[in-house]
View 1 (cartoon, rainbow, N blue to C red):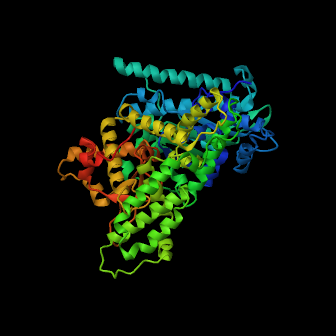
View 2 (view 1 turned 180 degrees about the vertical axis):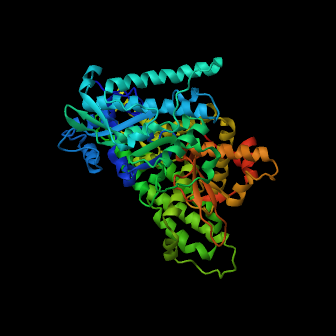
View 3 (view 1 turned 120 degrees about the vertical axis):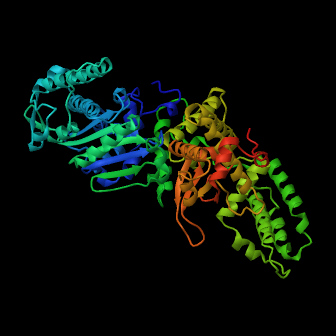
Amino acid sequence: MAFHANPFLERVSDLTTSDFDFVRFFSPKILEKLDEKAFKGGVHVFRSAPGAGKTTLLRAFTPIALRGFWNARRSQELRESFQKLVDIGVLSNQVSPQFLGVLLSCAAGYADLPPGADIKQESLFRALFDCRIVLRTLRSLQSLLGLDLATELSSLQLSYGSEAEDLKGIPRLTDARELIAWAEKHEQRVYAQLDALVSHTRDAVPSHQQFEGLIWLQAVRFQYEGQIVAPARLLMVDDVQKLRRKQRTLLIDELTVQRPAIPVWLAERSIALGDELLSQGARSGRDLSEYSLEEMWSGPKGGNQFLVFAHNILDRRMAAQDLVPSRTFSQCLRETVEASENREDIERGFLKFREDVKRYSGKLRYNAWLEEAERRATDPTIEALINLYVTRILISRDEAKRQMTLELPLPTEELSDRDNSQVSGAAEIFIHEELGMPYYFGIERLCVMASSNIEELLSLAAALYIGIQNKQVLRKRDLNLAPSEQEKLLKQAAKEKLEFVPKNHTEGLRAQRLLDSIGAFCREKTFLPNAPYAPGVTGVRLSQYELSTLTASTSRGRESSLLLKRVLSECTAENLLVAKPSAATTARSAGTIFYLNRTLCAHYGLPLQQGGWQDVFSKDLIEWMERGPKPNRSRRLNID
């Protein structure tokens, strides 16, 4: 059986992806992160950067997908997905799917409506939205029941509850075929009215004083061949960011005021918030809840849970190909650097260590440490090299204290006490920087580089899979990618990501200059000899005061400040920067940390851990945005 040449290039959110592939590729791990209240009545806004999985999540609850999961319930490969849907009450082991998910997209049609906020234009927007809910609901019901022909709708009867008394624009028809005909004609009237507005005629405007589609969806009852069907409903609206700002505000506000009895999911890219993104926190209320998909993975256990999620996604893709014998992606990636392959680099590192610490050889204070380092350096191994670099960092730290201390020898026990995972991490990135030994390799670091973004994970995995394919075509004995091969492919993918920024962003060139400057600044702070911010600096922080100056009416250079705010907002919305709140302490005020995207960290040669950051001023960021890295910083930015 033939499979995809590169299954990691498939995007299940694309409607061109077959339903079979969608069900097979969908990872149920994301369902574990959904809040239980997301299936309760109310408006639920899902927000993220592009590629985080919003559309994929919504598509999983459409009738065709649910039927696919149910039909494959006995398949060992898809059993987990089916069981997760059963656990949350969407599917049942006994009966065919009865959960009706209605998915609409705002990607087409609504922006064609004339701008403004008068009653006529709002009414047109509501009318178009309402008739599309009716159409999409009935078409979705056809898919849920497995009805292929419109004539089979004759057995589908509609009735209405007391809530339907509020319907003014949508007729309470009991024949599904008649209601479909009404909805199609109503949509045509909306577009006819658009032409009328252009020609200034006075044809009647479809009158909708509120969003009635949701009221209708809650009130209507469906009966097929004498049986009640689809009693549970979910309204899903994707691509809300495609609406005009006033349309988006009107939709969210009015749907929330209606206090829906069924869950309403609105999915949008973070860019929809605009400048508000820098000060936006997740809000929850009685009828409105907001969720950030990236923040789903940022909790205490979020990182490990994303690793499990990413593994599941990659392995499902790997199972969809037959070129490489392995059925799991991680088996194709070597996880360790072999000393035999890097003996020259290790020996060069030993010589560099001895040269760097030569000036301490006469100091009694460090004699025991240096002797211990030499004892550990008897065998040229990676572990021994890391120990040497840890010793060098700790000596540099001790010397940098500049305190009046007695020249007493430091015991070897204190060397072990001062060593920790952060210092070892700094030693690893120093070795990569100075000796060129691979650092960006292995399944865990691959998943970290994805920055909790599924599309980015798949893009990186696709680059690695091409390398695996090439080894297969060349009939290499070892199909697994060595650490150096992985790093080369991942760095090339990171470089292409950055090069794409000017082509895909409103202020692309400024964004690229800002990112390059932050990368150069972080490198300067990361590779100080004593590694004071181990394992390294990967972000910058603006205090709350500095953020407020970006919109203060009395600030100097207001145009540049607003431009910086727009660039920061766009970089955050597009997952180039990851914004994290920074709480106030006794030593500093509150603020926001802007971490570099982890794939970009690989491009700039920085560690992948979050945590290290430095305070900067908004005027510095404005200068970086306009001029790029300063020469004394960019000289360290030696990117191939």
